[in-house]
Image 1 (cartoon, helix red, strand yellow):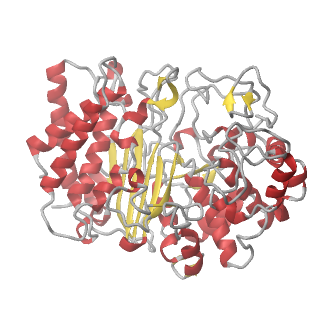
Image 2 (cartoon, rainbow, N blue to C red):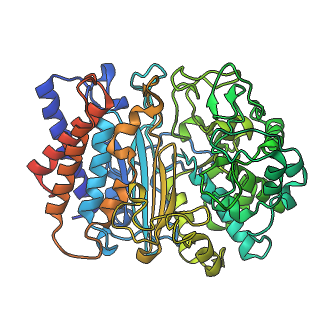
Image 3 (cartoon, rainbow, N blue to C red):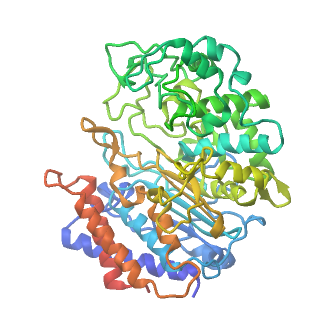
Length: 585
């Protein structure tokens, strides 16, 4: 039986159960996702697009199957075909799931978890799995923009395809900056022990102002300047530079000592919000003014400033902006067309991009400052400092990609090569991915490591200690396991949903409550039964039982009926019925 037939049969049982659920509850699209509600009722067309080796090999089947999303839902700026069913890359051929060592039932369960979540209000997702240099799986779910600014579901949004670009958030740090530095180190053009001042100039030290950070070292300004003078690239890569997590250069009213919003206090590090070259210049000056909280190398503190500076160093060294260097050095030789900063300035439309926050950066009206975006963000980077202060292109955020191109880039970290082209030496890969120290086994140079099971929320509990990768705040994950020759790129836009309770937590969106937003569930399931023929159905059923139990535990009595925690629990109950009633066949 072909994979398309299997998936179509599998989708049909979801639809049947959804029909039964609606007949029982009398709903009219109430349990569906954003595109399945309103006057149109329930849209029973397939919400997902799944592509694997067998569907590629069976062209006649894929042409007529709803699982292989061949309809053109957007005009991709850099792909004239605009088809979501990608042409096969000779360097990354498709492989039948059964020949990959990954279990079909695990991928099917991942597909169902996301699909059930989308039916119950989750936003969208895109997933690519590459193993042993071959594409095992590509799948898409949901719509590029799921909700209106008032929080009601949209009914007119384009479907996500395999070409849809996602805002990678902090995954940009690895692809936009680490890759550049690793290439420059491989080529002998940069030494990670170089001092920052040698690239940014003496004003990086001399312009430093004094801020007595509440949680800082409380040392005098001259001492802080000495620390900055000795700061190295390695310190920044290790997140031991000593900079505050986020000085919020874009916000004019921040208490510099607490780094918290305070409308009564002027932020002395405020730069600009014009999102242009002038803003970038002003922000570079603000970075030079920024004092350290503690001496570099003495503490680990994750800071976006570290990578803003590293991005500036790459640009200073190469004479090219991050976008140009990335495309010329990596994307063009690899034939990758869906990786870019500032998509709307590089041939893509809004509907080519998965949207993020519904009301600009206001957290549904909680945050205000002059120049703040208030419209739904789509095709622009969500991160405030990357957009307002750096014109959308920064070392810490700003990159967009689809999951397949991101996964292909991820494979460079396995042996440094693409075809006959070497990008990184093995020595440099080992240098950047080795544990920082025995006390920080979960950190490499920029890369997050599994270490002693310290990244299970992202990499799952089966990944080896040497697995590494990064996640992004918008709901993105890149994971690489050299021991299993495995790369996973899982992208969501979970923040394309209302803020659940802006007074309690303005940074928690409805999308955060769903299993699909947890990221780590994807590798957790992919590893189950890998490279074995053992029966894992009972193990998978236990996993589903655990999801149901966990989803119920997240509910409190004061939550209204439409609370996303309850919707997530409904999705897990739906999933439970699907598998306990229908099984795996």
